[in-house]
Structures are given as structure tokens and as C-alpha cells.
Length: 419
Image 1 (tube, rainbow, N blue to C red):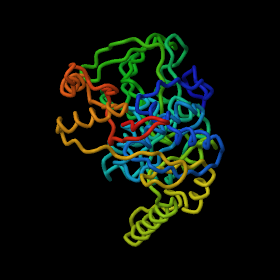
Image 2: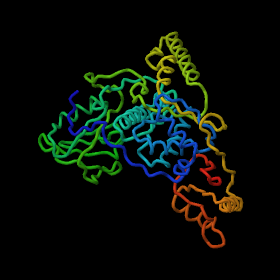
Image 3: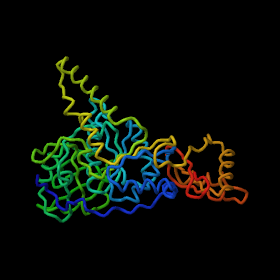
Image 4: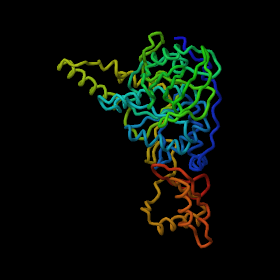
């Protein structure tokens, strides 16, 4: 399809520099991390990394993303809940925008059209962000990686741009939004919708900072302004907006697509990352059998039915795709190679005396401690609570805004335990 917008971007943008989070920087100072980083320079390497207690696997991954900027990383979670926790941790360690979630189709409840559209849009946004180079980590469930979708073969078919001052027919933009699955509404109140009022077109694309109002003068885009979804008033002017399809497939019959797993579209040097050792094939076969059962039951009851081969990659084919990639498996047990000398920190259970005792012991050993707080106010209060007789936190204790789902303590090269 020849899209109406101009100013498409390719995939050759330089990687964004990343400032290492204190936890990731501490992990990067360990011999095990240096061994891991060196091993991942070899394509197709499969590594089991031991001693990955608590949040260490996410901190190590964040350091790898910073140090190997041209690789794509896919975190394969066991469930949607685990995927959410992994994404939250990576947002803390890498900052927002570098990690995206690729949700599984099963996340949507049957009959909930709004929830279904949200998942479809998030899947498109994740693929476009990864293939364009804006994001470096995709967090997905193992089921999502096995699912099939009609993914466009050309990155340009995942985005078109509307630019202020450029020529663009009012009717051409409306036709493009219809082709890409946008729903026309009287007022734009959610993503995936557009509205037309005279020479104005309001639209809200997935992946956008907010809804946008495009004003035309003849066959030219006179202005683009963001607007408030609550009171519909225009706010800040912008030079351009990028529009993503509402779903893979949409209504554009002219786009060249392949019905495939996202694994088949990712670069060959993509690294698959997971916690735990369940074989990839085990879960894939279980999902395939479940899809076969549902298909047979639907046929028996004369209900609409989709063959498993249109929904999921066959388990053997998935195993082949996985085998072609570098694979990184983190386990808490001290097995494999490399092995981090790490453990989970003690549970403090809001007992400040226990926390102060732990920090004092760490300071006496010369260990550094990083405490993550939900916000600045919490960090300020905790700073007062852990202060020693001098009125300051113990030496080596750092309070950082952010949160992780679990803590970890480890040794750096030639240094006492770091937590």
C-alpha cells in the first residue's frame, strides 16, 4: 500500500546510550558477568547461568543490553503475570521505552472487544518498536512466541507518518485509518478510534503519547496538535505523528504479510532469555494439544473453529526456531557456567532495627548496599530511618528511586558481598 503520510523511518538508527542503573552496574563488576558477556559474542550459544538469585537475572540483562547495543533480547516468561513483573523490573533498570510487552492472544477475555483491541494494538506497537530499533527488549510469554499472526514483511507497513506542512488529502488520511482498522466515532475517547469534524481529523494511535488533532487547509496538513481526551481541548502543537495499525492484518489487502511467529521476524542474533529450565518443547506440546482439543470440540458442536496450525507454530518448528538463537537461561541454583556468587537478602518485614543491623554489618565489611524506593518521599523518610549516629546513612548505603520484584546479594571481584 502507498500510505498517505511521509517521513518514514528505517531501522538504521544508532542505538540509544544507556546509563547503567546502580544494581546493573554492580552486577557488571563481577567476574561471572564478564564471562557471560564474552560468551554471548558467539552466535547460537546456549548458556545456563547459575546463582541468579532474586533480581540478579534482570540486573545482568540490563547490563548486557547496555554493553551489547546491537542485539535484540526476548524475555520468555512463563505467564502473563510473570511477563508484567519482568517488564516492570526492566523499566526500572533501563528506563522507560527500551522494553516492550508482546502480549499473548489468550490475554483477552472472550467477548470483550475493548480488551481485544488493546492487546492487538500492543502487539503491533511492540513489533514496530523492536524492528525500528527504538526498543531493545521484548517481554513475551512463551505462548505469545508460539502464536501466529499476519505480520507485514516491510517495516514501512507497520507505520505511516503525518507531517505538518506536508501535502496530504483529507480523504486519503480517512481511507488509511479505515484500512488500518481504526473505528470511527463521534468523539475520540480511546486508542484505535478516529473522528471527523469538517476539516479536522482526531485520531488516537497505539504507541502515541496521546490523541492528536490534524487540521487541513485544502490538500495540506496545516497543523497537528495533541488534545486532552477528557475535555477535548487542544494542547501542545507537534510537527508529526506516527500512526500504527490497530491490529495485524487490518483491512489493507495490498500489504505483503507472512502468517508467522514473531520469532521468525526477529534478527538472527536475537538472544532468548528465561528463568527456569522447563524445556521449550514441553510447554509448546501442551499448548498444541489444548488447541487441538478445542478445535475438535468446536467442530463437534458445529461452532466456528480454527485449526491449530493457523493459531500456533507446530512444536517441532518452534524448537527449530529456538535452536537457531542464542539462549540464556538463569537459574537460582549454583550450577551451569558462568555462576554468580549470589543469594537472596534476608527478609526485613518492615523491621527497621533488623534493616539497620544489616546495613551496619555491610558497612563494616566494606560492602555497598542499594535500597530501591517507590518515590522520592519514601526515599527521604527511609534516609532518616536508617541514619546512624552521624545523621547519615551507613557508608556504602545508596537510596535509589525505583522498584524491583526481588532483591539480591552478590560478591564483586575482590570485594565483600554487595547487595
